[in-house]
Length: 163
Figure (cartoon, rainbow, N blue to C red):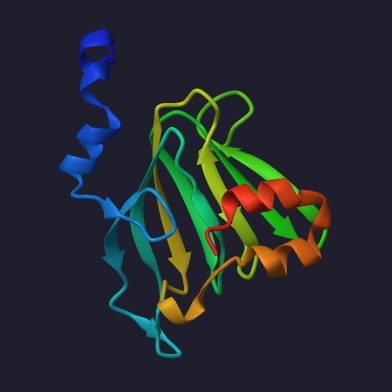
């Protein structure tokens, strides 16, 4: 079936939140864990996956993870993922547009934040982590600490840190 105006209207953020039973995420937006590997490696699950949705005006606050995370675009507009690595800041666009990629890797231990591109109503994506997610490897970015490492990004950090 080809999308048209009548079918596209159905697929709003609220539609996906209800259909996928998404709940508020502590870092912003909505999520639901979908799969966990039954196999473990060094007492950690080999992988975990979630659905993740951000509406216009929402963002995923600066944080870092102890494992690689691959973001997958499913529906809606494009999403900007901004990463702070040793080589400085870098922004990639998740989506299916000309200057976007349908998958983006955020390397382990990289500070990052994400938000819908300006004018986008919502973005439905997924995140896959390997080894799998655990709270022990999750760390929120603290503005006072990050601004010391990246002073040129003070305003951006202030807008995207929730601690």
